[in-house]
Length: 475
Image 1 (cartoon, rainbow, N blue to C red):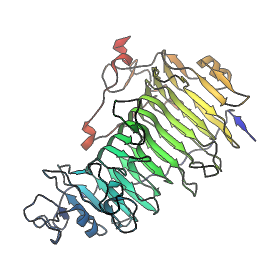
Image 2: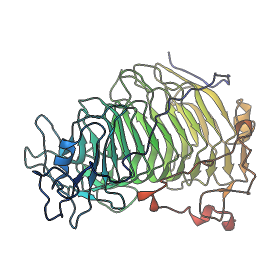
Image 3: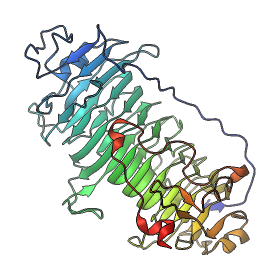
Image 4: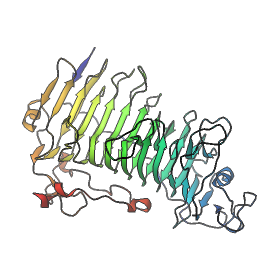
């Protein structure tokens, strides 16, 4: 039976599993392994020491064992290695060895350098298969750090879709200008459990099946920053993602109905949807407990989009809180999701390039239920969209266009419209200064504040500034 409920009710405390991300292999020591293709003595027949390094990254990743640190030195010309291991329908430097929970394997650019892998849009010479920058196959407890990857055709870092991968950490990366025929990402987290993508810059990920996009004049469509089939309990944090269609894309939820991504402390700019969750065919499981908080979203079609109408299970427990939206059309557009909580968000301006104008939309849930648990303390500038739609595409569709109308439905008693703006500092902080520090739920702050948002080091030196027209000085 099709139905939607948007009655307020109190729910219990939420418990969030945390993934421990420890700093390891941050300096090179005797006993570590090295690849340095420009070294005069480089050879894959070497032992991989600093004085006798390997010549290829593939030899390095074939040689590491649990607890090892493998370092890649920068080179005059980018690394390109034509690799396709037996049984793989994708090429690329292939990591198929695992660490343990107590002894992770780390593959990293040498400290103070950033080696470049440039696939140059090539196919493998063995079988003509699309190539990734790094292909992770049958591997767990591995950290990939401090590498620039460009020109890949099968994603920058690709978790192999027919194998389970656990606790793969991808951090301090710069992945860009990927050109693939559908379902590509800077990082693809296929069947990845408790994985982390953090502190990285990802941009210009193109779908070559299409001939145009709405963001730039490159003659291709766009795809995803972080893509994934069947990922679970993973964290996407402190990244800068731009010039993509989907910032974080869960194409299909985990088959065991484990939790969806927690997406937090990121900057999304020039994207179609910052966080999108789909089902890959009728009857497959919907996601569980997706979280989206403390993100900055600028010039986007939507912050969160969920399309689970045709799923075979009920989607549950969406959390969207403490985000700052700038010139972005929609905060949430979702179907088949109950336990929705939306609070402490700051919405500044509206995206005139997108005509839908819906700040919030709960749509036809199919055979399942839409249900709001809590929605309040969301604050809007005077030029922000004010369309809230419930039961969209159903005979019971209900639309309100103001905070007053929202309050009549039992929501938004502490929300406001008209005052909030960006400060003149260029850091996305909110004005009037101090007014929003305790204006949220239970006296908490409003917007993406309280912790660093976006990359904090390395590739994160590439930083955007908010648009001048939404700063206080423009009033």
